[in-house]
Image (tube, rainbow, N blue to C red; front, side, top):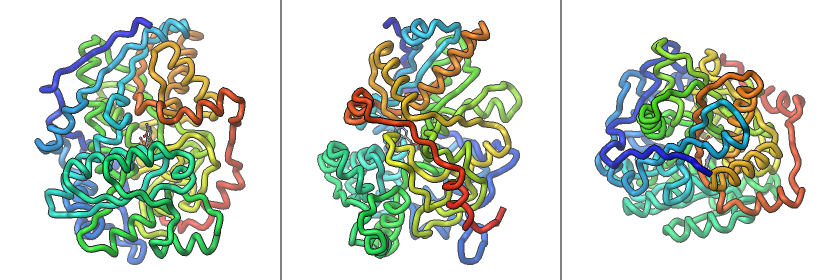
Length: 453
Ligand SMILES: *Cc1c(COP(=O)(O)O)cnc(C)c1O
């Protein structure tokens, strides 16, 4: 292991987030009201989200949005994060490619999620909100928001997908340590939860259901807002600190990436590392390739349809123009944790539709093989989610070797896997299998979507 780190100082923490929508020639289609089919205005979102988040969500004109001092102050706990040249991995793969990774696993909760959690909690606090609520799948988002809520003095209730609540007790304990209330979803505390429990008594939960519960709680509780950890434009915006720092660090390294790779759940870490580099592609200055790596068991970008769909199971959210597997899609019980969401955000979906970004889907066993190689060559045990990005990087690096061509690859290490060792255990005991969704299952799920596009 002879990896080289590129380190920025605290004063280099970006002053503003980058809003890619301002530079897109084809803007994403608008979010629409499911009842009236009218495009949403920021005011329509105020009952649900903070005003600042609502405005950022629909902002198509400002390229740069200032990061509040209180947020930058919190970022200083672990930002700027290191950029690393992965010499160990390059050597192992015997590739002419130069491989770099941005290490977002160094945050106190071990993932990139804190970048947006802090911003969203801050805006709620600033607007006089006292309570917030959210959902979490594998628990990383819930953990990040618990810390942010505690810092800004907000009460937080987290709906955690039941199967994770039972199988991932440590993330639940992390949330409790930071002072959040954690409820297994589906629960009897909401109409949406009660309905699904009575219809399907053994239902193990899904992100879509947990979102419905959190949205319902926020809409029916005074002074309570809903906070989301991925998919939406304002979340992607907050994550651009990743790519903005990486750009400075690549300058220090004296090269720029030909290929940028990140794993893809709802798109927040992919957007975070990609959008700052994408601005040079949109302006025609550079021809960078962007690859979103998703699980073969939840392949919305590679196999989903481009259509308006709900962000949640019960259909409480606005209609979002997205690549989707259908909002009732319930992925197989795979270990990709945070990558089990049915759709992609509107910006990413438009970029994909316009051919500006690519996607690949990766079978489960390949991700754990890549994770093991990475741990042994670079020393960091990656999150199962991040391992999808590593697997895609290894594919690219092997291809460079076969073609005898050098290229520069940058991937985002979205988190570490130290709380996911149960999944590794199962991999080493040959207890994990590949799972691919059948075309029939996808067709069945999307056939009821209203054909708005
Ligand atoms: C949540 C999570 C993801 C997936 O979410 P995105 O919004 O697609 O980034 C990926 N990696 C880690 C470590 C996560 O916690």
